[in-house]
Amino acid sequence: MAAFRSGLLVLTTPLASLSPRLAPILTSAARLVNQTLYVHLQPGLSLEGPAQPEPSLVQATFEVLDLITHLYTGADVHKHLDVRVLLTNIRTKSAVLPPQFCSVQNLAHPPEVVLTDFQTLDGSQYNPVKQQLERYATSCYSCCPQLASVLLYPEYGPRAPSVEPPDVSSAATIKPSSPAARSPKQPVRGYHRGAVGGTFDRLHNAHKLLLSVSCILAQEQLVVGVADRDLLKSKLLPELLQPYAERVDRLSEFLVDIKPSLTFDLVPLLDPYGPAGSDPSLEFLVVSEETYRGGMAVNRFRLENNLEELVLFQIQLLKDPSHEENEEDKVSSSSFRHRMLGDMLRPPHKRPELPSALYVIGLTGISGSGKSSVARRLKGLGAYIIDSDHLGHRAYAPGGPAYQPVVEAFGPDILHKDGTINRKILGARVFGNKKQLKVLTDIMWPIIATLAQEELALAVTEGKRVCVIDAAMLLEAGWQNMVHEVWTVVIPESEAVRRIVERDGLSEAAAQSRLQSQMSGQQLVDQSHVVLSTLWEPHITQRQVEKAWSLLQKRIPKVPSCL
Image (cartoon, rainbow, N blue to C red; front, side):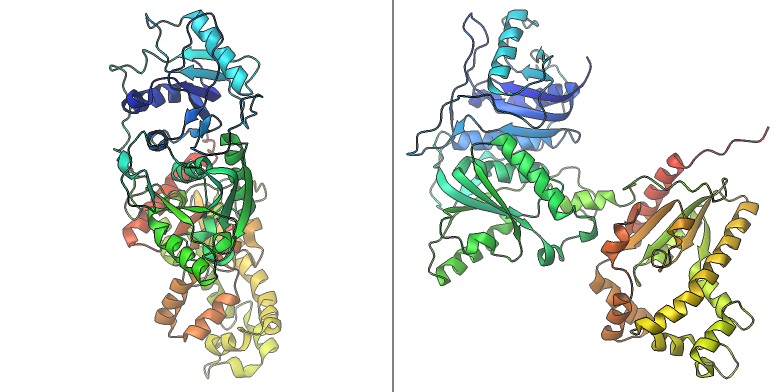
């Protein structure tokens, strides 16, 4: 059966029986839908009989919250699916009368197919039932005009193969601040206004669970703090974080999809407290297991400022059974960014002016990033390496193309007694002095570029297919026009400073000054096609480089063989 881009899964099985069936149901749905899968909970719904089925309210209980946790945990197995549990018909215990269903809800990705776990008596694709399913779906949500329908039973039956999600302890799904025991059938109390915060990079299923619980608890308004600026500096691989505006757009689409009746206030989170620390109208705060202490700190801050404490709800972390070495064992954006290392981030440049038989990579990174070690690893895999530092040494040498112009520009006091240029003295002269540095780079960069072009021609004569130009100043010098792809090696600035101090014997202040004279890691990544990092053990770096090299071989244009 053909796959659909978006689908609506209507779950009709009673909640008590649904959890053990979720894995095979999601597996069956994942075979039919390849992008967005909306999930609508309507336990007990009958699709048989002449009367058109009507949506009804589902009481928000701890059992419902546990089921939503199971759904997002099970969905994490199917990496291609963007699963969204719709909450329009789920209501908390509240004095406010819930609005009745009066209009069709628009969805960001109108379903092309509606699926259900509803079981017909003989397990067949019974047309009257499918017609009732389509009528029900279109009475609740905006769907594509040519809506298809599929009855998943008995496809998800006991004999259907499926991927089992990790075990989920339902008792740990949500922990209110009160230590009192609760039963699955216990209603969840609703609040007028509440808050939740996070980075929300590459919105994943653990984020969706956190946001879904927040949306169920809130009756009127939900304030969502989105980490930005200083709060991002401590994140792993911050250069690969989605921009703030992109994260907010994804968040907004998801939130409006799952509960359009709420008012959402998405604000930048610039300090650890955010709006939760100062807004007197807020009543609750949703946190994860790892941010619970932060929630306690927010309440202490509120008490210090004569504000009432917020009711804290602690949500369990979703485990990631497929996490790799050096990755967290939870579903995490950090792990997603780690897995991006070595991947192609944007299409390569077309460079018809370069030799057709040669594919050129520009390798760059801030000082101390470890790009030279990456260059050595690429050489071991077969790449021809052009070291711009070595070219600079050749250019500076007596009789070299840069020797006389540099001596004339900076005077004879930069020379050793043997007449060679003292690069340490020259470096002290230009670092921290933008005018002097520009004088030097205006001399050196064009000369090194010419020498690099000569090396490219030599690589062709040697029959090399891939050439790597190793250059810290690749982008500053404008040499991206000489390469098909830019590969950047990133590490935290603090680690770069430590390495420079250890390697070059500089003070921390001098090391930081050197870094400040270069483009930042973020600026480099913004113009890069592939990102690598030497932050971990050498074998982890090797694995990244081998992955990047393998993917590179698949996209390099094939050179026609000579007849």
